[in-house]
Image 1 (cartoon, rainbow, N blue to C red):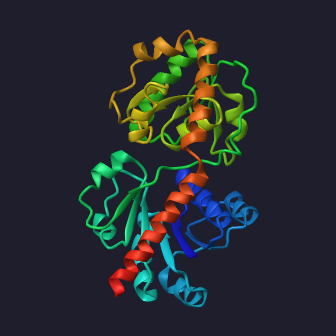
Image 2: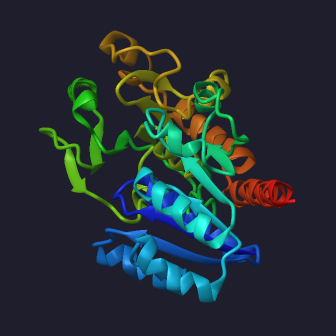
Image 3: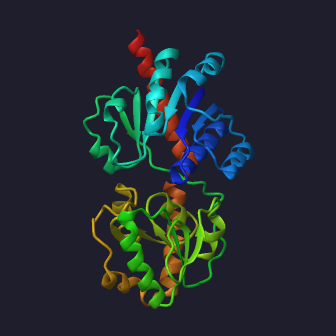
Length: 325
């Protein structure tokens, strides 16, 4: 199948998701062309080349149309609100189905989603929010590259990694947690934009696997939790809200909302955090890391994600064929 994947570049997990999907689709034998706009990061450009992902640095439909007329894609898959209208335009011109993945719960272009052949939602929480869509929708959770995140044998080190883009609505939660962790004897590293006194600030990190191998606890939401678990770290869900430590008892419940912190909807509470983080039991944290890796192997594979997306493509092609007949 020839698939045009469209997105705008974001320096966050959404771009990593798109690149991982492209790689897996190529490994499954599909032909993929990535149209990505606003890509101004040399490292990401190099990654596209190293991964062998054919790409164009635009999502403008007029610039793409001539190239696509020759390449003849069979389906368009959009991943950004900024490329959705262009994908619809191209789909109409080429008379091919369009699929869109919704990455955010507050996605506000629902009228454009209604023009898709199919819509992919990344969590069961999101499926409930978009239950009234008049087009077929499918839940395909985010996957991660398990091979790259394969952990070495973990040794206990009271080291936590913040893996997060900290927006203003998250700032106070992270500030309070930072103060608590430092007072409880933790070393704290921050990959993203979280700068706090006493924290080793790393800025945006393109390859997080080496950091995850050092840490025994990862703090963040969404993809950061999945990557942390896959790398054998215990995981603590903190964003705008706080769901706390991921355990075998609550993991399925937290996964419904994509480890966003919205499961319980609580603000960070130092007393509750102290119960699990003030006097950490090394064996408990190492056991949580082993559990996280096992759970990731069963549920978070990027190959599994790509196979599920592939089935959505087949469904969209079948629906388009029936609409034509």
